[in-house]
Image (cartoon, rainbow, N blue to C red; front, side):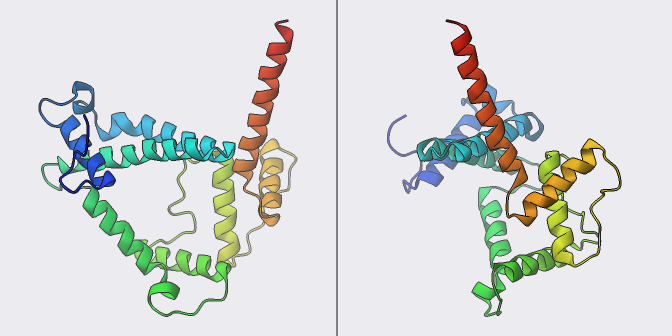
Length: 216
């Protein structure tokens, strides 16, 4: 295919048009048989590949991986358009996130006064809680998050809420010690999940180097 796939030549619209072609009769058999469930593993993989690109500092790689992740969003939206009872597509996805961003930034769009980024974050949590009618700080924290990231998220919610919740430290288990390290990282302004990814990547480089040295 050459040129633009969409009438207006807008690249994002081109992507939507290409996906429509792939899913339509006469398109791609593999794309045609996919479901939200079958695509879930690709969504997760692409998310982690974006994180890997971020850690590498390679901006061209990041651009490519963001494109792959965007494809997953467009793919899921295209599938949603085919629902027989409640169809919606990429336009509705975009409208929803625009509405959410405006509603959660009253200091930008509604003249509300805030005192720094911390208050912005607290307001975001309060608005989100009201929108979703949450009854617990734990609502909306996916159980499937990696353990370090989940611990970081939970500790952040607790800190912003003002609740007096002590970090479990009454035993010497590995879990308690790891959680204490997450709390220590938060206090230092460090993302523990990203820190461990970077260190693990460094270990991988050393393993590869050792393997190369051992082969001589």
